[in-house]
Length: 437
Ligand code: URA
Image 1 (tube, helix red, strand yellow):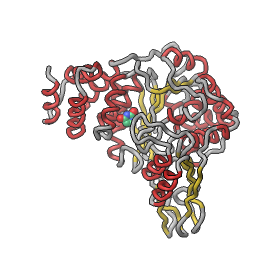
Image 2 (cartoon, helix red, strand yellow):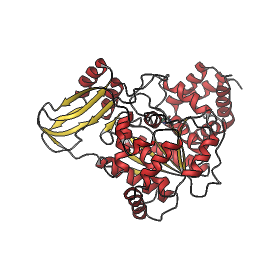
Image 3 (cartoon, protein in one colour):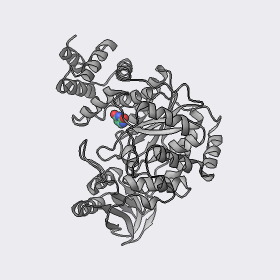
Image 4 (spheres, helix red, strand yellow):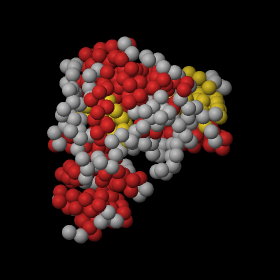
């Protein structure tokens, strides 16, 4: 087999055989196929797409590039949750300990923020001392003892995805349905959980800009799960406006803690309650969504979910006192306020622009490997549908860089638009794939 022939085959719109895809993935992972040939292949996939048989073979080859965790000895249902990426999307910080407090076992591998979207690992690392580089054995021991762990991508699991994703990120090939589906699902399959809930974000602030695309991505992922013996459900949720009030690493951890204490933003609280209940139902620990909601309410009001979060922080070397006293988390020193330019109702808070503003403040990275400022970011004071008067606070910005603060403040003005009439906020969810009811 010659790599160039396979590139040509894909470029010309033909269907690759599983053994041809395995040859490309194995060759690239081992270093025999150079970046420039893989980049060319990825661009051919971007334009030509893939048949389901090819996406399945790609996912399988990526899973086979590393270990597959065996969670079968854990004493309860195993579950995982993943988001395709959004702004202010701190859902995993709440759903993971909450679902663990309801009896599920979650060994979650998460990513770092890239571009305008945040990443769970950067958020957790804003907690002083928190370690995300556990070995697979440490991960399993922790999940057995406290029910949950969140770690960063390890070279043991799907090394092919790590390498391919890094190349996609710098070659304009991230937003391709088969490439996203195989990247997400290979990590989820290798992480070993039997029940997997995926939150497919859809809208301006997400990779999937429209609903048909989001539904198609969900369909591919549900099918990949089924073919590999896992139960996968997808929820499609809007990402036009950031989720909750906080955008930025430690600010989002504070908001997650508040939510675990029952004092979170209404939209975010409803999202995490629903997703947790849906995960419990997918995992078979409750028969109905209503029953799931009941368990979720009990775990929140009893403090069990917050306790799980504190245990997870402690087990991963972090300062668990932040669960009681979030003021211990870092906060950038400089502050600025964005004020409403007039009277009206908030019609739009553009998640993409808010995400870019957060990057300018230091909360995100321009390129892989850049450091992030754990205490930088912004807090929205108003959400879509709310009434505002000229001069009222729309957002508070935090940064350690005076220039970044100034640029973000200017940039953020374009993210808000006002209307003379009240505009309804987006629904919490746009649809489900692979989940009944
Ligand atoms: N999240 C992933 O893990 N992979 C992608 O390709 C996109 C989002």
